[in-house]
Image (cartoon, rainbow, N blue to C red; front, top):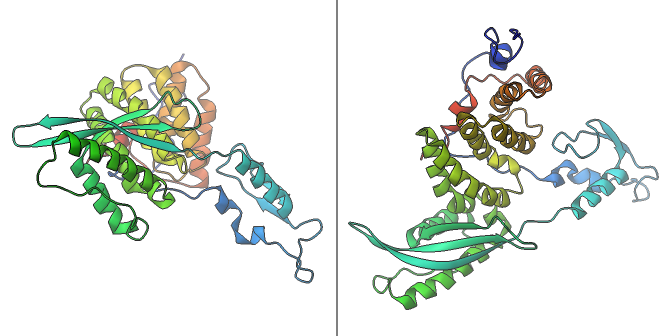
Length: 343
């Protein structure tokens, strides 16, 4: 028999009612959060240079530090005491296991599209990951004006960094000849490859948005319109590329994963919704202050109860999070996701 303490029971008010008070949290409508610092920031400058002031060498036993690894569940325990040497050795081992995702860009084909008042060329871009067989290669289409917008946006922030990157010139005539299209295919391939080679550019919002935002806007528009199957079809194609582009900061893909959860749930596929939610929680890790953290946990609690899984631990996790860092929120996960990619 259901009790008021269980999700789905008539008397259960949910973690939102139990844990949160205050006004509704303001939701950003322009996409995921900005990139976050990488593991190097855990060390800091001093931990690399712990020296004996007299001999200029590290202390024999090393000074002990109490280190918190909130964002690395596979690392040392939350309050691990390690010497400077032990800490440096740990991160050296970690870095040996890291492999930067490297992407290759091909402009595979092009087609001329004619509309009532315009005519333009659509270039098909194929993005693949190197180093192993990539079963999730991304295929997308962009026109010259899309590339031009990217160039203008990058110049606002990275003018010096991209000063040697040549952008294909615009021509008033001859844009639809076979020779011009072939020339631009090669030029755009070179252009994207050169941009990707610049670290600050490939991690920038402008570059990532160029490759993912049009598809994400369409998918989130379908979500808002209740076209969940269509939204999922698009999201399933774009998420692998988004994950590769944001490997330096996985939290950026959380809104997209949460949109997939909402679609699966509203299509009455709780198992698939729960699996996607677990991926989103893994991306968030211990970022309890993130605007998606509490609504996502609330949705996962309800899904776990529906599936007969352990929802008590998720409920406890949410309650403890609110005790440590109270975060007022009043939006459900769906209400939060439908506000993304409005423009």
